[in-house]
Image (cartoon, rainbow, N blue to C red):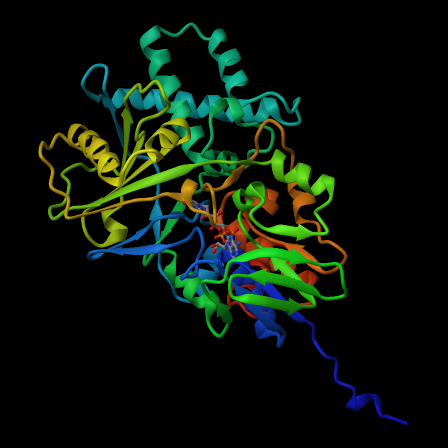
Length: 452
Ligand SMILES: Cc1cc2nc3c(=O)[nH]c(=O)nc-3n(C[C@H](O)[C@H](O)[C@H](O)COP(=O)(O)OP(=O)(O)OC[C@H]3O[C@@H](n4cnc5c(N)ncnc54)[C@H](O)[C@@H]3O)c2cc1C
């Protein structure tokens, strides 16, 4: 008779598609617990929508920049455990350039900002559990009718409210559902602040990838899961595994650039199409000389009829290491810009910077334009709750199939949708389903202990 002590359990072979934060997290936790795990990544680099670019001397994040709600964010626990520095970012200093009047508006208009924040807060309370076809725009119009503001005041508040919501969600007010917002609640009521990874998100991505088997430039085209094992067809040949974790962005699932055989269930397909996937782009400039302004946040009120024109300019010189401006733009204006060349986009952006900072003939030393919405491995920036979707759509997206196909990624995690920490926690969730412990990533256990 064989002794049971001699029986060793053979761990399944696992493949993870995508080396963004969610895929790296899943793979790292499995790998550190002795699982046989391989990542297939389409790009020549890891990190997905977190990518720290060396722009000359500057280190700039072309995707995610902030660690949102630093206190209580799992990323903070991980950064602390790995000794990566986080720079504090309190959003309390800003200036606004009003194109219509051709100058900066004064500090007393800060009150307008408070008003815009209040509107957003109220909308969150009022829309809790409200009919899902109510949108941020519906609420705003109803609210504004009750106020008898002067047209001047209403105009500025409309702008500030739109920037705050549209840049955060990477979507238009009329497409956003307000029913499950949690971010501002914490941000304002609990006076939480955001943080910046001082060396960019690269440090996290590198730490997560340590020791992993990652096949770069491997584009997944088809997934067959008829049999007990799963076959993955790529430009680099066919891979076979027992269990597969799919972490590609929602934009890629929407485009159906990966074929599933048998095809995904109707409810999964409905969920994929219901959840919104926005577009947010950045133009980044570096300069020789520092800017004189004290504020970090600069709003540009350009009154472009196709949405907000470079509405937010962030002075991120303190994290980049050299004088650097990061300009954000989204929705229709971003769509319009995507049809233009880099040179045209840079020229338009530079004109705005010259006005806002009152420095004619600005000479940037380096510049970069992002193209997330045209990137075939993201097709957009991040997911959001739109008027058609609910939390349960994200849960449906996260459901595994036959114990063989698993799904992670920011769009599968309602409590952190659209954020890096959402991607990370979705990766933890799937690794746990596959039998991994939390030991493989430093700081993670502390986070879950603190949450209890
Ligand atoms: C401009 C911008 C600003 C942002 N700002 C912030 C911020 O400040 N703070 C914050 O918390 N979050 C921010 N985010 C969101 C954050 O970056 C994402 O939520 C997070 O990085 C998503 O991680 P993920 O693992 O879910 O997906 P991804 O990082 O996209 O990983 C998926 C991976 O799958 C790969 N892939 C795709 N298709 C295939 C295929 N066919 N075969 C093989 N591999 C494939 C991709 O190349 C990618 O590496 C921002 C995003 C953008 C774009």
